[in-house]
Image 1 (cartoon, rainbow, N blue to C red):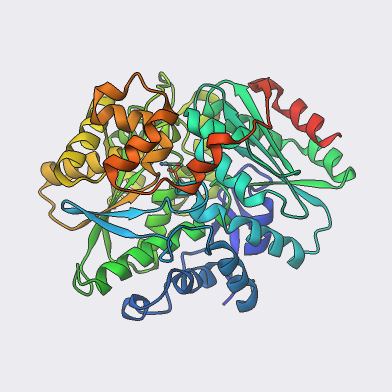
Image 2: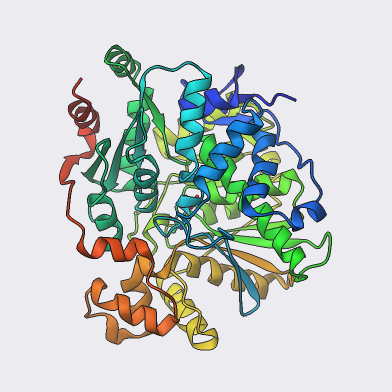
Length: 495
Ligand SMILES: *Cc1c(COP(=O)(O)O)cnc(C)c1O
């Protein structure tokens, strides 16, 4: 069966998976969604014994139906290889009474590697399939982790260029160093004066600029996106929820058919949406628990049905979740609007023009799978400290937000189902916040001084991604105002 994709803002036109991956964002500004979520065509019992790569194939072939088996397997095997520091790719670790799905064993030690190590291969394959001759220019706004993961994925990939925008002062020191030291002739990194939402809106505006697209085409370029609005990023994220459930079964932590809850530290709503898709594919997931930091726009949305970004933007110790416009929520809004593109487009217009929209009672009625929660900065710190003291396990700040919300939900609801926590970054990446949470005495130390201490304290090896930046040379130093992003892109591409 051939699965086609539609824009969340236009129900007329359909495209293939490879066309959707190539474009990133639809011409009307909408996001591509499959016409329906496919079911798994293997049983959970069959999935039990599968490797990560085999699971990836079982999931992705259901979504990317215009890829041949050979093409898809080539993409999968090129992505999930020794760039990861463990053969299982996404290990499941029992911490107290929850299961942490560690998604940070790739090249840049955050979960963005799970999708961004395969996206370049999906894109190149899609370009070939569609006879694209232009060079593909990846434009990416990052709150810190996507940027580096995308740079690492696309560096020196023939036929591609990549330009990453990050908010100056809005990312951790390690994140910034990881980006500005990136090698590769086709890579560019720009710090913007503004926050992540400014960067993301700027990139979206560039994508929607038809005149610019024409100028680029004349110069032999076309844009695509590595942000989680690209369906080629979302689908690879469905894989690890399927994989985790199968591993819980295999390890006899759960019985066949037993439902579990999943808690996801959320920013742009991509990761948790992938869990929702996994549920719709047939994985026995009960609640999808959406964990926010103090930028709790999603918590308020699930509680009230009103999405309101008109509020103070708070810089927290979990910067990859410092987001007020969660782009991927649009895919859920479209779904609960009964796949009504007009209705969704109207809500998105209100969001753009007024910064706020309210969904109908009927739409709210379909959000029963979701629960919202949030953790304050203090609660995040306490969770890191308490978990370390009780179990010896050290988690990063984003994961701690989820761990707190998971425990809080369990206490308040009395829901005792086993809970999976998406563990989205290595503690080494946010080392200063993590170590200070454990003991104030570390507050005065530089991030680099803390690396060996964390290694000793957590009995873990220092990841390669950290070793690399200790001595790396700075290669990127561009900065610009957030309303000058288009000019910078033209300058970089020489058009
Ligand atoms: C990107 C990111 C998140 C948020 O994920 P979304 O898919 O944007 O919701 C959470 N934690 C870390 C460490 C991240 O890098």
